Length: 128
Image (cartoon, rainbow, N blue to C red; front, side):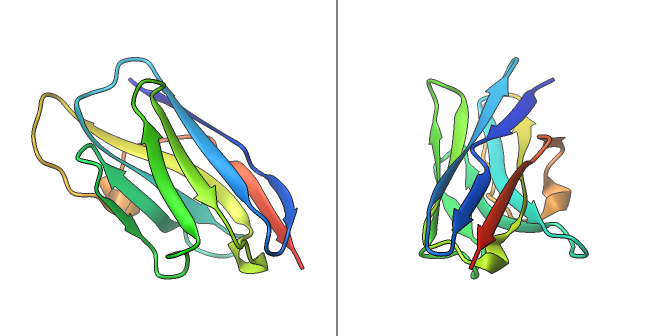
């Protein structure tokens, strides 16, 4: 139902910053969780940051204090501001979402199994 398109990836030096965007098109529901995930070669996809429709957020320990997830409701866009980037942040970054009809409660999550809408990914490369 909802298409997610990531953008904003690129190559930066260690210590640099990037802002990723995830634009959601099509009908969106009132209740949702959204998140950013990343996957490096040979590794499992891992949750980086999550946000729900209440505005609460959660972060992986590895990025806490450096990354910030946010949303622009008017633009139906999710962001990931990444500061103080490290080479170990190099990965394909994916936007994900899970939508529920109507108004209800939903938790934020860093678990891939709790999302069913995925973008195509945007590459982030951090060099030393």
